[in-house]
Length: 344
Image (cartoon, rainbow, N blue to C red; front, side, top):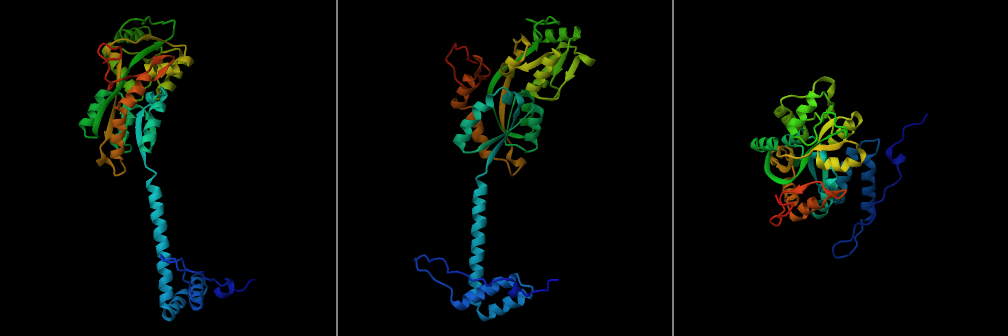
């Protein structure tokens, strides 16, 4: 059995080395007496005897040394905390809630690097349906919302969840289906095509996730006056890419944004059957979340990001972004010469 030992028997002597050079460059050293006192002071903190009593005795015998050591120790702590705080402040990032179509189409991979480089900030993307993206903004969990459901966006701004909204771009929705087209919808209007799908009891895949695409689909079913029932209507609750995969497996009809379809075209046997009409136009808007929602909201960065998206730099990137030689989106803030094919 090991007997108990006093702190002085357990720990080796501690000697404090010379002080740092002064501003004038002259090095000062603690006296031999001060070194002994300093060593005993530090050892007393770990002693099995009474450290308070020993420190009080040292303070009475050599208060200048003890006070000096304490000041130097506190200064080092303050310097360490300050440096850590400065380093921590550089970890600023922008939280972007956006739709899966901007991610699945590959557009964000083109747009974000330039902004991150210029603003020296990381953009953290949360790609969800429009409904969930708007909810994240409403809760103050993100700085910017980039979606495509104009009525929902207007309601978001009217409720003062956002402080700024800008039009950015548009593409078209398209109704895809098997090349055999069992419901015979090719070339008819969007409303007529959905009515024929319902009447033919053909399979239809819906995102069912309150996304902008799902909201538009619901509007089209409403105007058609009839929708599929039972086993012929499948709600995935997933993003555009995943829903396209399911529609491919089931050889079902589906409403998709044209950009994501082009990105996934090589993996699909489904073909575009209806892609014209004003009710298939799909505009995208970006909004700055109201900073009163949370003290964590990066209001200035949000404004910078919105400015970037509507700038000629980003708008030209949107115009030039293509897959298999076809543009995925059309910019809404880029001035085109009169009569241009891209003029809006």
